[in-house]
Image (cartoon, rainbow, N blue to C red; front, side, top):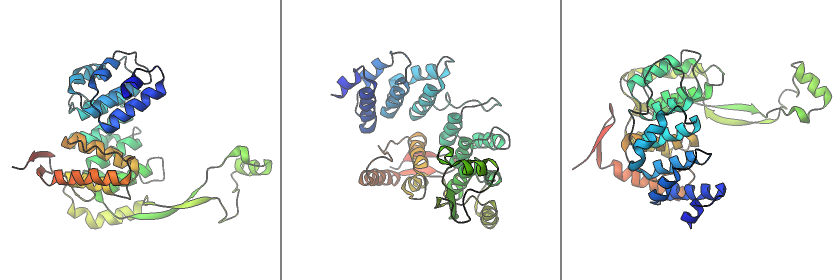
Length: 321
């Protein structure tokens, strides 16, 4: 049935088939390789993603060729990047550390498999107008303590404040949280004329305390709180060591990231990709799985970790005898 869905001319059926193959790791390499001959349409990136999930090494060189081609769309290159990283093709994917303008997903790749040189590069980017959410989150995934002060400087209430706070939490594991009132977005089409006039004049639409919205509990974006915490704890962090949630990077710390109820789902999804890429172990995990399936996958992950040795400074690991 899945094969027939792949041959369908209806994109919705093809998408479902590819999702099932990817989710279940169904070994269907041959029909997928045939599909690579199709034009580069909206399905092409999903096909690439599925081949990467299955770990099909036979397509590695062709993917690298496509990745280097100037004719391939950025949306496809993003999928090629993640698939190649899963296939352990890191040197050919990570862009040389020069001053060229990079796509956000390149910063993401640096965070998932880069090292000290990439952290230094991202720190430099963060001091320029080229800083973005993805570059700050990549700094958080890399985990170098030398980046903490730079991240704190981006807790300025701007569009990157949330990413900076998440990155700080990923590195330090500090339990710094705050309750913040978030007003509902204003729909101008639903306002009366006198309310529109108030809005345009910069006047408040509601009396104090009556503004619609909700209070959320989030990782602190208060720079003073973070500066105070870092001043007390910085002596416990070595500059050249990668950290995750306050401890030297290790598969256990990635597992802790996956298990955390306080870390946003999209960070947990990236942490899973990090686990596959850095430690070459696919545990068949997805944040959209039912909780009992996630727990079973993470238990298998924990058992695997118990049987390896890892150097936290370079992420090299070996099976224990």
